[in-house]
Image 1: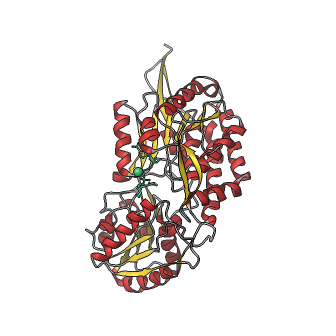
Image 2: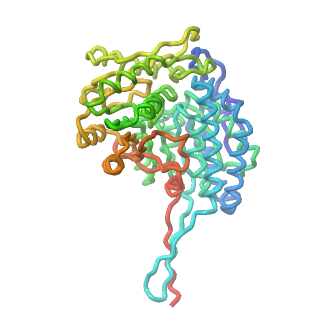
Length: 478
Ligand code: NAI
Ligand code: MG
């Protein structure tokens, strides 16, 4: 069934009649096919979503919507191992990462299911004889375009808040990794959403994705992916005067001050860049280190980096392969250019013995003293490549941290409480961690960027505001 699309509560072949290969990044071999959906399929999916929104789905109470969502959370938890195995094979990510992803995927449905009936409005004091109500309403039909790095998590992150507030949705997963989206759609079907509430159309970005982003029947678009495609999405939305939320990655810094406790910083800094092979929007891809501890800290960091092991999803080591040959070559190009620019390599990890041939492997690399004007200091690599950069003092750290086109997340490592607050407030980004980084999916925590990292917020209750629209009702009762 992976080669069919899910529209109007039923599985069907795409209008093109064509399929696309599904390749396991661990060995580069094809193991399934997905449907090549296109504009006609998107038309059908958007029409089905509209019917659901104006019909049975739209008529449910918030409590009833929430109950259905919570049942999806339970289903995902019940099928967690099966889904993790599928996700690991589809993306190449180590099994333990895929297992953690399923916990987070289930949690999205649990969180937003429980929140669905807690969207309260306001009463505004106005002129004598008036009552003014402010209510939050669904936007209608949402188009949800997700990437391949955390497919199951992204399914929950983009769909659960949209459905919780009462929208119907059309999801376009990334062509590189669709299988868990299709499987979770089956689980949603078993839960019993009215037909058309959730539709999943697989296909290429420039075909199915572009058709969805530009569809006149869509009321809101949520996109996670590259800044380049984010620009296209926003332009497509502009043509229809509709809003979108864009989450476009980053170059997030970890700032290590001289009073930081090395033992707690080091494992987190390493994990923040090697988790999921560095293919994480909020990857901690720059580590800014105070000059006074730079040599000592980077020596210990290098030791840990050199020990990292890279293998297939089944070998379940620190890093799996990257998602595709394209991404592997892109990362290799960054590493090659940095070496050619004579940026010092402080450590390089190894592929584990027995790594299958044909996989898209990239060994983690730690570069030191990266010049601020080099692309490694300001461009997203989306691979296990960490740039170490020295700084002099607090003002210097803030300037460097904020000195990229991106603004997604930051980590601050210091035991000085007043410095924690000063630096946290000075960060030009959407999420700041103090003495930590990332947090088990962080479902509850509003997340998103500024500048080239995009706009709008996902996760937390903020996502539900994003997926809804305010209506003001002014009543003159004399
Ligand atoms: P991409 O932006 O092309 O893909 C993301 C999603 O957008 C996929 O579902 C894709 O099918 C869809 N898409 C592609 N072209 C489209 C179009 N014209 N209209 C509508 N939808 C379209 O990202 P790609 O090419 O896979 O990765 C390139 C780079 O983007 C990565 O190296 C990384 O730097 C960044 N990226 C960031 C992500 C994040 O989590 N913020 C996730 C994936 C990629
Ligand atoms: Mg692309």
